[in-house]
Length: 76
Image (cartoon, rainbow, N blue to C red):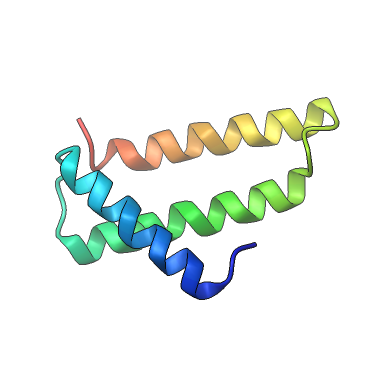
């Protein structure tokens, strides 16, 4: 997984992108949303490996669905 500083840089960029898309939340909340997305993605991708099995693909697909559901609260 990326180091903490790298993750924070990505979180800032992602929060800004969410703001540009019209996310309905204060900036600090969007930073937390971005952090959750990045950390959960890192954990799932570390666990799933390189999509070497159907199980890995299913886990990654479920992560995508989870992220979409999470973001639905903030984006139209």
